[in-house]
Image 1 (cartoon, rainbow, N blue to C red):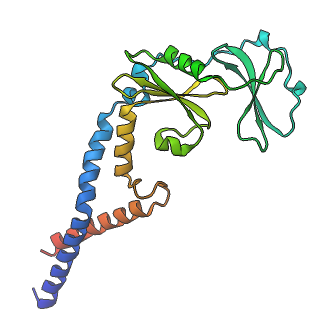
Image 2 (image 1 turned 45 degrees about the horizontal axis):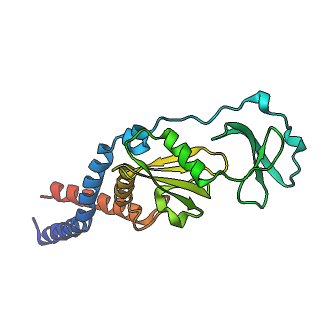
Image 3 (image 1 turned 60 degrees about the vertical axis):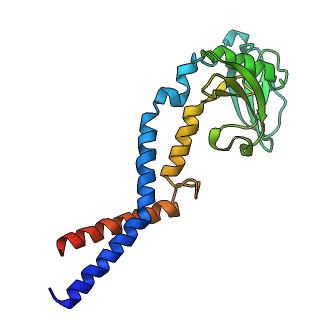
Length: 233
């Protein structure tokens, strides 16, 4: 082996060493979070273990007496006929251009309806809940900054919090009276593992994420340099 070959091998050793040192902490994080993600069962993650799985109330067509064409609204984008809890009455959920919140109209007599109350939201949450806890509070959530990555649905919404050892929280739509999302401590831990696993603590957007791409490129260089050293040993 000549001097140039020895110099080349030493250079590849240094490249392999430094790349490995850079990636070592993240490899450890990937291993720990990967195991953690797989150990959290879907039932715990979805909140199914403490839920009756109450379905949205069916629409009773015989109670629908008002045609959507008779509703006096301008800029209507879409109209949806649904059942609203807790009264289980048919309502029109109407999206109006320039208006953030949906407009709810009683399909029986055409009256505009206000959002359900916090007490009604708590009642709906308790009807779905089958754990040993109780409602501790009901929060009015009007923007994402109040919940972080816990909720990605429509705003505003109610968050019904339970005391049950699992930090159960149910999100209830104030417009249609339905539970939209179930959360608990398992979901919080899963989100933490997920963020660490995919560098979301650095950059939230995964598409063309610089940290993910950079770590992938470095990993490929580490593998390539390892093969080169093995081949030229």
